[in-house]
Image 1 (spheres, rainbow, N blue to C red):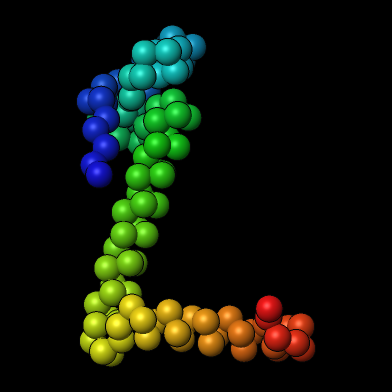
Image 2: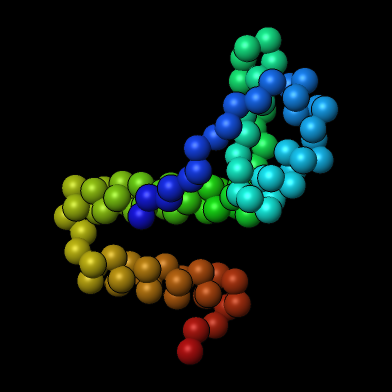
Amino acid sequence: MSMTYPAMRTIKATEARQSFGEVIRRAVVEGEQFVVEKNDLPVVVILSIRDYEEMRKAAALENLRALSRAANRAAVALGLTPEKLDEEIDETKARLFQERYGGTDA
């Protein structure tokens, strides 16, 4: 699932400072995103919290997918089947329950 984002508008730091309220309004209300430049170098991004949270969520999901793919490759390399993995998880849960609570878990 790839997210699409609006094109970022580049503005000078002076413009951002002079029009800060308007820049914030446009980010929140209109969904605009801004790259602020100082001395012709990008130094900061302004976007709504909603867009920021969506970007963080998309990045976290991609990291989870990559981790899942890596775990799958490792399991295949070790010859572990889904059934064997489930069995090992159940055994580990039972062992941890025993260690923590000193009884059986059911």
